[in-house]
Picture (cartoon, one colour):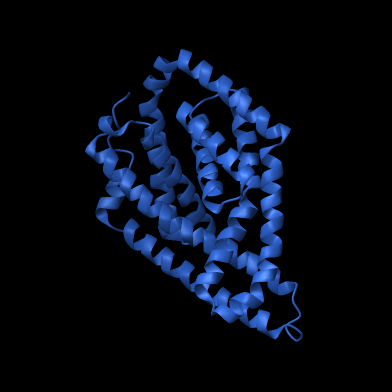
Length: 274
């Protein structure tokens, strides 16, 4: 966990030097892993720290959404249409980047990192108790994933798929807490399954967010005076919506496999304690 903090600070410093989409992506992952670790603890201080780290992560959402939308537009649209649309995309993208850079130098950031370090110091003193609770924590997370899987398959709506995406992410982070050399084969296979599901569900979620952003852009346009931009938006929306459907179909097929259900069930054996 100390190494995770070092990586977070490294990404933060790199972003302040020169904004880079990959640095932001990794910073967001580090924040999520920190929040996942805190979720296994109790107490008002822990809840407040987890909330504050969540608020920092939320500040990066717009930047990540616009970064991925610009990339998607570049890959989908013909060059001429992409050039028509790019100035509007870059306007929102730049504003979102500035929001991130301000947050990284804010009092809220400094306070959260200070309290995270205090948490690590306290955790080291209570490590034995944490290890005893790890199996129970993992069993609880597996139950949540199993429930979310069944609801997503049966109800097939955006809310249920989103809950499954979060549950799978939490499971992977919990399993990742055990060093590779100490993981059971079952745990290692479940991690690989979680990675695959995370990738597909993450790309599906991107299409949902991108669709919302494109609707907002379309509402701000006059299709009569800007027909080229309006056409580009239509093409992009159609392509992105289809990609979202394809990703959910792929996830559904994965979840319906017998081995998948077994791997994501509460009886899946926990990895050994460190």
